Image (cartoon, rainbow, N blue to C red; front, top):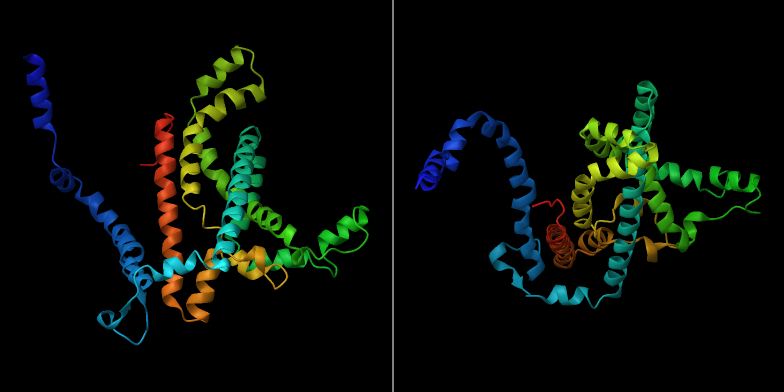
Length: 316
């Protein structure tokens, strides 16, 4: 009876959602602009997805549009160009994700081992500065460095005797995905490292002291203390990355592509641009974009379910 009375007291003592909202009204007002921003730019535009089920004509009102059902979705999977772009998007996304994860985690571990704070801050600042450069500037640098005429990469490889004549790096399809992956790592590795460093700071220092007493060296402490301490962060970020598996990028591929490498450079976002704005087929472009987003959201829930079954941290 006493246990039941305590349970009833606990239930009656809990505040309802609206009571909590009133008691925390200042926080609610602070969050209101962010909520409105998300609603306005993330949910209201979903109304435009109706174009994927229509033979959309810009001059007509919504009620005068001709409905086409799933015609454009069926057309997508019969189009070799779209299937090719799906392949390119998945492959480049996997390359960027795997390289980004490995380099960011390794770089965070190495930075954490630096003892001189000034030098550590200098390296960290230099590493994440490229994140603030626009892709226009980055692709311009990449084009100049890989240029056949006085390109730094060709000059260096020729000076080392690795090649006999300049290589047209941006004209050979088999090199393009590697160039995209290396460029992404150079631009984003420092920025991606920040969250891992923040997670490392939250690890209990006594764990390192206990490991040192047990005779662990720096490498053993990284493997047995640091990595397990940031495992939950790694899992959460991995789930979020899986949800962007079809978002291989747009700016870098669009600015570096040319006729010689178009078959390996085009992504789903470029497909949407080509058919939506250049060919004025807004229905097909909307169907492609809708397909990409639905697949990404589905993959997030699948990855989250797998993480929950494995006993790891999960996103939702």
